[in-house]
Image (tube, rainbow, N blue to C red; front, side):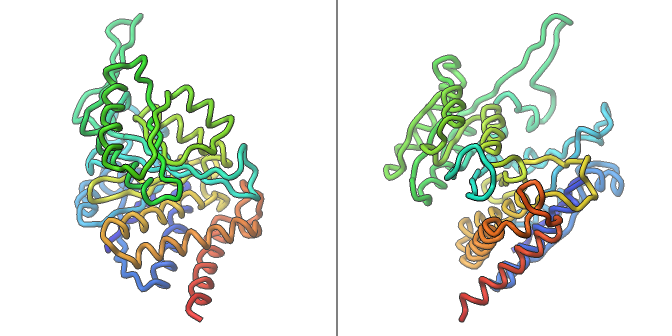
Length: 359
């Protein structure tokens, strides 16, 4: 197994190393062989190779099973310079679904308790499809009084993200998928997405399936999120719902993510690069670490690698213990630990759990 390491910008230099540290501990305990390769991206990529997405990085990633990518501080990049752009990694590798779980913890302040939802957001189409377009933009302004935006929905894009949702749901206890759209209004675009979800649902008779409009789902998530298990939706709707979900359980610091394709995946937390706290060693590494855990889990299931699955389980158990104890966690979730100290504690807990299980 070969995994790339892309630090990203700002706090990426703090949270990604903690993620790698924890994953290495889990891999060692499970005798999982991993070849780690550090590659430049973002500001570092531009400084070394004149582009935020260096060709050397793209070529190297093609040879990996997946990679860990830190947050990108693209909002601070110079404008009107094609070498300073948000790295289009999802487009290059056709990573079509963003998988974002949200989970509440008893001792962390949250809007609701017992939240355990997995959101799947299609990320190659919709109203943000220009991020993955070969050229051009999905928006234009023909005159100073009118602005126009386009929305792209395809059967292929809808079908494969729906399939990914059902594949995840079939392995979860509740086995339920909720397709979120607004077909009553957007009959052609949301209609096509809904049609493909229904087609896929027929192939999974053991998974419960329902459809709910986006506005209704937003209200229900705030009032009572407990009925939801796996939620699949289009790009822009998913962009909003995943942040809403993170808000339910304590914020973006508790929101991991995994972008998946047919053969590769990218671990990337939901939060941004947070330049305001960069270099202070106070960033919460939870989301980045759990994104890495998701990468191990996905690769294990995809390739039938039981050691990778076991390593992911160790990370999950260790994180539960560290969070529940509440002593060695960062201040945003009630502790006093630094970024590095929290990573050290999770790593040590993994080793302890593994050692105890072998007695």
